Image (cartoon, rainbow, N blue to C red; front, top):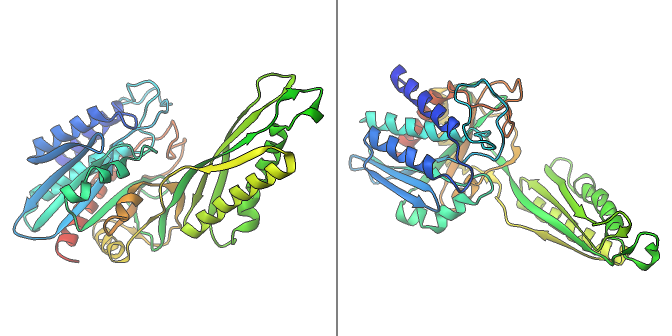
Length: 383
């Protein structure tokens, strides 16, 4: 990548960092993306796909193949910790703590590289996705006709990865990232005076046992060679110091890499709810809410991505999957594709994902843009 393009991309990325848009409110970011695409010379731009999604199309030659490249655009409701960063977030309580500013900018960079390169033939779809952070953005774009309105044979994406050296690309043979589901256990009892517990059915007592029992699902039911997480994150119940409550709600998150493991967790939650009801004379129910599925690469696209990665950067094939989730998995259920990690450098000073000290490393941009462009060209060539 030429130095002037790298400097332009850095400037654009820092603008996005300073002006973050939280999930489902990405209108200004979408407008910025559209303006930059027009500056680059892209003429086919559609906006408002699945919310604030943007899909741009670049065509060259007579090739009949098509490929999609995806980036996510939304920021997080987190207050940025850095006070001396020149491009610090200007919006209180909102920051790009996951690097989507870098993802968006790298896809703009890939567009620039493809426009400058006359060696390829076919159709490239640039998919700028809103609402990745739990907002169902991928599903919304699909329901809005993404793959019908903008046909593509394959789709590729990436995520920056703190702890991996800057610019190193990791390609996984198995799952890349986990499925994520939110759940809640609702325990309804019979309220009463704290001094007369025998006249009540105490949901807080039941909740205490539920907390311990939920931790046994993974510890005592899951094959130790498999991976899953069950985390209880909030508990709400009670109104007065001298009253036994009528209701407690426990909420949490589950993560797993395989569908059978997810079903094991769901079965465990339902079993615990039934046990609480019988043991403590309460009405306990477990509810599992929809979420993302595991992000698992298709074999042919995985290998294509690995070859493209090796052509532009150091390649790793030995990293384990992460228990974080990615709704790129929704796209992979529609068309073949692959998702890779690109190193964002050390995590010193709290530069982990979703940390208020996080910042995307601009040195990643040439590698990420180059990888996306190279992947697109190989896909269009029928690799």
